[in-house]
Image (cartoon, rainbow, N blue to C red):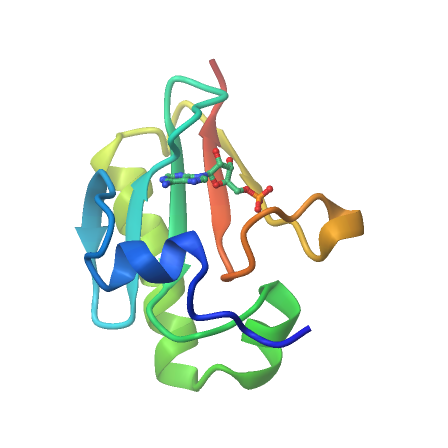
Length: 111
Ligand code: AMP
């Protein structure tokens, strides 16, 4: 599968459709999941065009990788869930439950 620039998260990144943005770093943004499965359910995505977690881990630069995880922690701190605990999920491929083919992780609070 190749990256499709018309995917919904690419459209959010380009500002073509609205997203409830939480924060932005140099190479990543976080925004609320449209269909939350927990009190806090946020998605973090790189700004770069990566299909999934495997593609990102294989091809992202060190700067993108470091900044992505910095965005994850800043988002966690924004919701003050670092002490409460949380889950991180990443789906890879249709058989792995992935619906949107722009790499993202889910941050879900434990409530
Ligand atoms: P995944 O199964 O990991 O690909 O999850 C895709 C996630 O994107 C789902 O949890 C959806 O609720 C979420 N989603 C789909 N469209 C939007 C959107 N426009 N804004 C925010 N989240 C979305």
